[in-house]
Length: 276
Image (cartoon, rainbow, N blue to C red; front, side, top):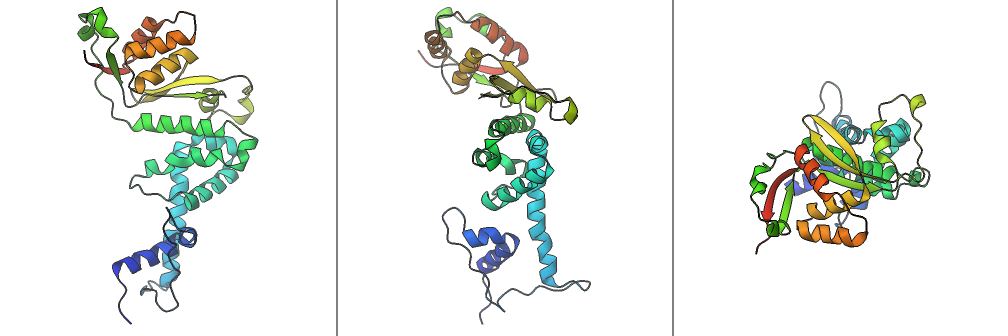
């Protein structure tokens, strides 16, 4: 019988380490066939342990590393659902969402989407948004921030050019809106269970997530500031974003005050002209 190719060995190894994926297939590709009896590559025994037994360490390790990666990022989700449910969640995630990243930090990026269809959401409807907040926290922590914008560079800018500015924000800055008080839940993730008493109904929150030195800050902002930040972070010019905001409500918004606060916090790194 011909020696197995490198691809044959890779497929066989994958079928042993991730048997669930070998059964179901991934990304529209055919499932890897189970190795026929007698065709498995030779596995040398060591210290009395057969090769098959030693290989099982890698299969167990894949799930263990996935669970550890999720637990590191989703601390509040883990606290809310409890250890047993989080273990089930991690096992389902390892089976349904194949990791294609070399960095374990990125492993859990799709957990909010899984929670959108997780049965526990019926009882804890805030879970997907809480996970999205924790993913923003993770991104903020690992982002490489840029030097903040020097406001003196804007002082000589003619008023008619302000409307055409596009603001560039720190990579660590993110915004999120939820129908639930996810910021309060996240802030209580390390409190004793008996001390946690958070009203959920009728308490939507908009949050700006950023890094301040080595600390991650989740700052509550009102709906209008959230809308403005979202549009500006999406590439809208200052004039276009403010015009949309002005048309949304008759109430005058303290845009100048918000902008000054962003500058003090170091959120803005550049102001680029959108052209003539």
